[in-house]
Image 1 (spheres, rainbow, N blue to C red):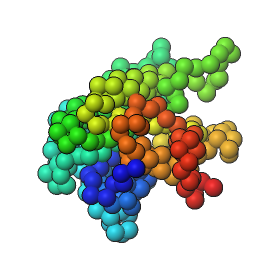
Image 2: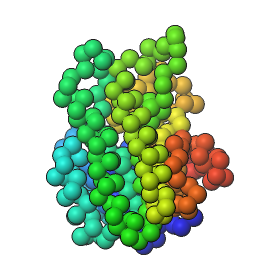
Image 3: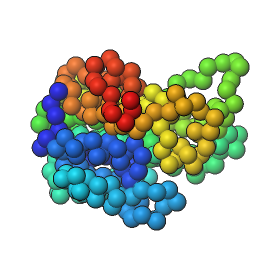
Image 4: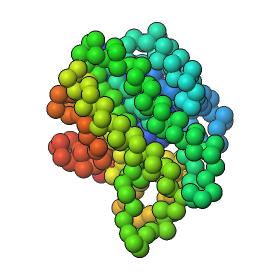
Length: 268
């Protein structure tokens, strides 16, 4: 493992939930962390959490962090995000694409604007951000790209089919595309010393978005997973030797168990 001390990490969708936890974990190991999202201040979004809160929590713990507001559905915001991070902190060593916009609607009534927005944020944005950071990573001969996925990328099992699957087809399409991008890019840049992996929760993380969509209703307690599992698994994937640990479609708890990493205290 290389550690993150002295490295620059960019985490998108870091105003709350999984992205916030990953940003805090990286900063605790010495990374200078740039966090990005649309919500800059508390109260600007129906869900609790903001970039300002994430940055302040990192700084209060003695870490280094900056906030860069960006709407990743917009090409110009993607380019400006990388430019700002590299100007303020330096070249990006670690990119974590976590941002998501999600609508749960059945296919026969799925809104076209929602469809396009989901693919822009969850597929096109990770693709383009990777394009923007790869030249520098290749020049330096090192880099880590991590795409946050979901078990929704798996094909539904059936028949019979679970009623919980209703409305999740487009979300699953986005995550499946993201995973195929991950493995393809890993093969392309392996020779350059750049690791590319995808990471999903192995259970359900009760983030504000999950609670908003009611996805936690009726889920047994043993299927709920502390957000610290995702943060620790992300840390592992972004500090392991890129030569050996790349092209993984990983799930948090099984990955930690496989690599013999102690689970975070909050998850015990």
